[in-house]
Image (cartoon, rainbow, N blue to C red; front, side, top):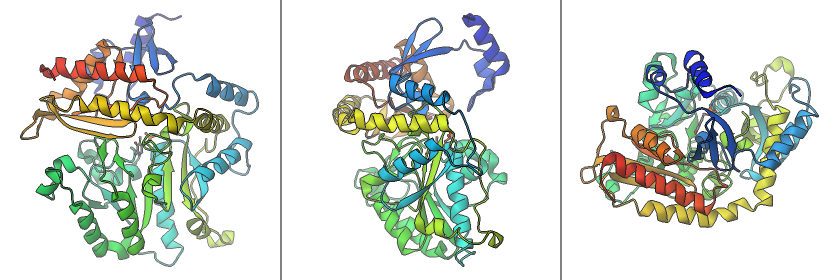
Length: 454
Ligand SMILES: *Cc1c(COP(=O)(O)O)cnc(C)c1O
């Protein structure tokens, strides 16, 4: 095997890492991962790190799961790739049928792509063209949310709302109508909300925006239940259902981006399900292949699909597609993952784990630098603050989240923060002992960095 120093050297010299200040990266000594096993990542020295963020919100059944590995190996020996341009294929057809069986009722069609950003972009383009072809071309704008994250391509960034990532690209983006975030802990709309009596003033504002702009609005784009990259911001119960009602009332399509929250993370297969909502368009990726391979799907209703039917010369075709659309190996891993959900009765087995995670998070609540703890299912965010009383945040330049996650490596954990928010997003297969190990490490790391005991 090639030695660690060589690998580190090649990485430093040749790899440009995502969302990374490379000057800092190059100056440091980096962990090189060579293997995975269940909830663990293993580096080239054999050190083990519990994957506390499921390799950035993708891993579902653990690393190197024998069942998914076998499905992939068998697919590779059958067919590695064939195009969906002009050909149907076995695994993409089987997976589309499986997805339609389990997503909220009313979604009937699956459009494949290969990452979360494209899944959202496809939804945006579908919604835009839908109105064009149903006689309402003036409905061409989008409602997005403050603190939203939908990916990094230009269209996905346009409907994003995280200034620190998105502002530099502003001149390249299309403008949207921005609704307020459901960030209750730092609610700017109502002091009542800050003190825990949320009356969803943000929803009232959204309603006013819709009233004003519905005639020119194609769709609203939302991360249902949890705004992920914005800091694991959990929406109040009933919010998504009422957003759906507003969309119906104002004739605005609802695009639900379940790229992060789909496939069991919230405790249900899909987040929309928890609010009995069927979106008009739903974007899936990350967990779809259990974290194995890049695959995404944009699902929609018969009504939208039908608006694209016509004679070729009418040019109603959806002219969009990516080279690896519906890749058979990726689809095979997704099918195997869905089989495991059933075989292992995974969603039911999650219930005690969610409870355990909740109990462990609760015990952090009194820590002097823990401002807010937000949890939904197996997703959690711990927001660290300089001052608990005033909720004064740590200055972003202090990079307290980065410091805590770096410290966590000493406790055998891999974590990746979102600003001052420590993210917990483990594989759903994580064991009870591993949850304790994870939360012990998180607690110790917060204490040693902020210098105060719980
Ligand atoms: C990660 C993410 C995306 C983007 O997915 P990529 O595969 O990184 O392009 C989009 N939406 C949400 C909610 C995400 O969490």
